[in-house]
Image (cartoon, rainbow, N blue to C red):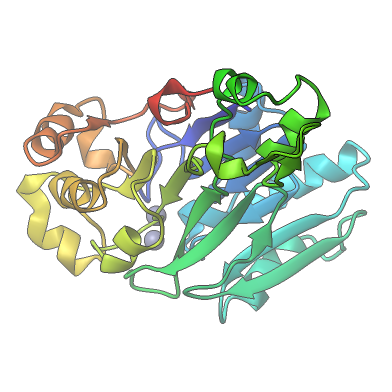
Length: 310
Ligand SMILES: [Zn+2]
Ligand SMILES: [Zn+2]
């Protein structure tokens, strides 16, 4: 079950020639989700071949660099005769801002757009095998972060052990794997615990949007496979980070370390660091043992299952 993240925009408030404002695209088995939509997001979707079939758009907050791509994106969707509804999630108190962007040109899109306000602890979206959780962030406007958290998967089925116990190959295997006891021809009952291992955790991705470092980021998902964290500044601007309600790369790495993330994507870089990301990566690596990196626009990551289990 592939889970793929494409960084559409990795710049801070002001874009650079190399970096677009914030937007992250996530694809999971036929479903496509978008997190934030800075100006120009639709062109990034074209450039990097993600397509436009998103069903859900999760907005972290209503600063321009996270939402100004919405009017253009929706207009293109309408030109493409989209009929499927689009759900937009946005922090409490920001519905009107999103609504005015959706209706920016004075007429409604030709397809249904549903706007839902969310807050800390909400689960705004629940799919078959995963959910999206909202969590509190600490920015200078109403804001939330989002985590995609997959359900636990069934434990591993020990086929050899089942055969040893005399279970015939066939439907009894899947009943055991589904957690049901089965009765053999000689009357023996085999319990699922005898042949099925412990449930295995699914994968998770946490995206903070703009924020100072917060404990909520650590609590929302256990040991995320990927943490995408505000790293607007490097150590040289730590005071400015606090003042403007952002984080430094080192602070992002401290959070990644405390939540035992596997990988840390440092994003939302201030335009003052255009073309130079070494400090961000080096300072993050000083406090985080996992993989810390500054993604470029267009970079795509596959998120494997832990330990490469199928
Ligand atoms: Zn921003
Ligand atoms: Zn912001």
